[in-house]
Length: 557
RNA sequence: GCUCCCUUAGCUCAAUUGGCAGAGCAACUGACUCUUAAUCAGUAGGUUGUUGGUUCGAUUCCAACAGGGAGCACCA
Image 1 (spheres, rainbow, N blue to C red):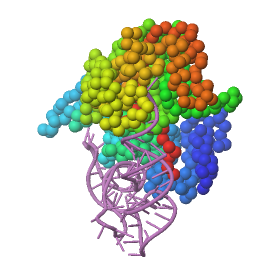
Image 2: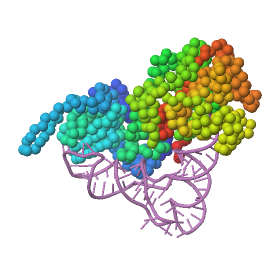
Image 3: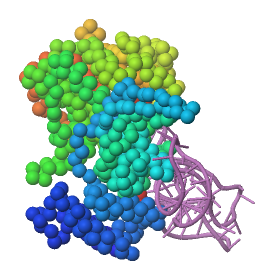
Image 4: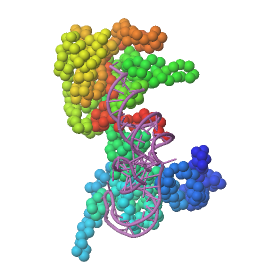
C-alpha cells in the first residue's frame, strides 16, 4: 500500500470519527443518542480493523505492528462502548500539585477488629486529568501514576469500587494515555497519597509506546527530535523549560519596572548590522529584494532612542549563519536594552538586577550548582579592569608592547601586521577568559577593538565597555554608546576597509548614521545572551538543553 | 568546512581473537483487591544506520554516505 493510499485510509478513519457515512448532521445527536453513533462507528471500524490488511502498519517492523495494533484494538473497543478515544472538553479539573496540597484535609480513624488494626481514611473529592506514566495492575486492582504539568499522583482503581463500565474502560488503558478521574483523595495502606477513583473519563489514546519507563529517552538526538516525549517523560525536563519561561518573564518585568518600553523590531533587514556575524540570506519576491535575517537588535533600538523612547528594549530571536556547538545555536534569543542618559555603569547595575530577579523568579538560591562547580551570584559581582586581568592571568605588563608580542609568540599567535590591542585581545581570549569563573564584570577595554563604544574622556585609548563572564562564557556585553555621527561613519568605513566597493556600499548603514545626525542622547546599552543565562541558572551543560527545538539536519533515512 | 568518537528490537543496553544476535522495559496470553521500577509463568518482537569491499563466514575488519556527539574553525 502506498503512502497516498495510507493517507486516504487515515482520512476515512478521521471522517468516520467525525460523522459516520450516511448520517447527516441533523440525523445524529452525538450527545443524546450516542448508541446510534457508536454502532455505526463500531461497524465501520470493525470492517477496517478486522481485515487482514492493516494498511497503517504494513511497512513498519513487526514489533511496532504488535504495539500499535494492540493499542488500536483498545481504541476500537472504546469506540464500541460509545467513547470517543480522542476525548472532549473536561472542565473543573484541579492541578495535581494543588490536589497534593489537600493532604492535610484527610482524616483517619483506626479501629481494631479481631485483633487487627484497620485505618479508614476520609478525604476531599477531587478531579484531575493527566497522562498515565506508570501502571501496576494486580488482578482486579490497578495502581496508576498520573502526571500533569504540576506534578504526579497515584490513582487507585478497583473493579468493585469503580463499577463495571469504568472497569471496562480501564481495560483499554495503556501507558501514555490521557485520562481524567473523579475520586476521593485518601491514603493507601502504605501511606501513599492516592486518588481512589470513582469515575473514569477517557480523554486521549496514545498509539505509540512511551520511552523506557526507568531511564526515559537518553539518546540526545531523539530527545531533541521528539521533544514532546522528552518533556512528557524526561525527569526535570518540563521543569527546566518552565523555568526558562519564568526567567524570560522576570526579565521583562524587571525592565518594565525600570521604566523600559518593550518593542518589536524588524527581523528582516536589508543590512546585517550591529554585530560581526554572517547572516542568513533570504529574498522578498514581490519587491525583488534580497534580505537578511537580523544578527543583532542594536541599530533599530538606537534609532528609537533618537525617536525619544528613552528606555527601550527588545527580547527576541536573532539569527547567525555560523557553526553549531554546545554554546551556539543558529537562532538564539537576545536581550538588548538602551537607556538614555546612562552609561556602562548604569548597565552593570541593571545587569545585576536582571539576573538576581531571574533567580528569585525560579525560586533559586544565589549559589547555584553548575556541573561539578558552583556559581555564586550574590551581588555585587566583581568588577575588574581588562588590563589588570591580563597582568594577573597572562603574567605580562599590558602596557609593554614587547611583553605583549613576546607572550603572543609564546602562544603561537600570528603577530605580523597586527595592532597590539588585537594581540592583547587574543592573549586575553587565550589565557584569561577560561579562568573567569565569575560572575565577573570585565571593564575598560582597549578602544581600538570596540568600534561602537564611547571612549573615556580622560583616557581616549580606553573604551567604556564591560563584558560579564561566568564560567568562562561571555554572557553580557555593554557599552557607553557612541553617539557621534561623524565618528560612527568613520568607524563604519574603517570596518568596511578591504571589502569590495560593492560590498561596502551594500553594508554601510547610511540611515543609521543619519539617525545619529538627528541626535541620539548619550546612553548606556546592554546585550545579554538569554540562552546562555538560562543555561547557567538551570545547570544545563549545553544550549540544546534549554532550546525547545534546536536546529537539526533532516532525520536520517 | 576540518579532526576524532558513536549508531544493535519501539525504548535502555549486552554480544569473548571474525564463528547460530541476547537481556531489561514496553507489547501479547494467563494468575493475583493496597501496589509503587509490583510480582510470577509463558509468547512474540532483528535487513545490527545505509551502500559497497575483504573473508569459507562480518554486529565485529576496511571505505563511502546519512544522522548524532565532542573538539577546532567561524562567531567585535
